[in-house]
Length: 306
Image (tube, rainbow, N blue to C red):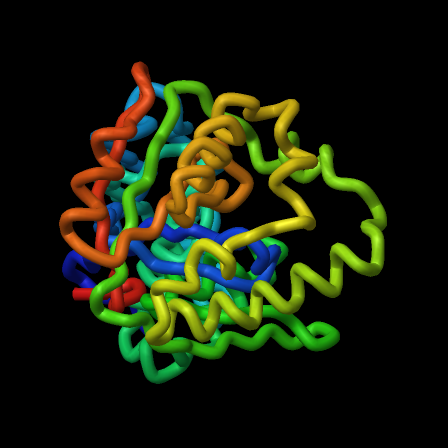
């Protein structure tokens, strides 16, 4: 095998996981994309970052995208690039749009993008690593598949694992459905949010949650009038309130007005579903002071490579 001589470019969507009751199982790709490119150099490592994280992400081989590029190369039998002792260098450019540590899948986007770039840098790499294999590798790296699945495949995806095998099943979304995401200025790390979850929950609440998750699949597929009921959660949102009280306050205020609002991923971003353009415009008007809102559509493309 050999590495390509040109530049490989990818774009990857933001994602929202959980979607209320679908804890660690449901994920939705959104029309907000990071764009990255990679090419080999004779030696060394050059990382250029614009947009989100330009002042904070590392510029060395610890960069998550660089690590995932090299993980893909290793899977394909190639030597690593861009490391101090590598025979080949790497140039990576990142134009980041997805907010970091806000519950919109920025780390999953980086993982999927890095693996896609690594695969693309190998001549014939797309024949040696299938999309399903890329997804499984991304889920292994991330530790759970609910964000990497829509980042890889696009659309609305139900994902999980059976033993050590990851799976992802795409499900339709009614074309009338869009979203507004409300992003606060203060981040919350996923590790912190997960640390607030209890080891067990009451059986009745687990049963209720399972029913609403099933209803959510039907509501997204073609019954948007059920979205408010379908997004009711018992498993994770309330437990995370100490880390994001303003987010839970916004969720409750929107739901009290009949709007299907949830915490996006591990938070603190709040996502609300809209079934019409008028609904979406009305939601934007509810943006709290100091927050930023983004009206977005469902992105039916996952990672795109050119």
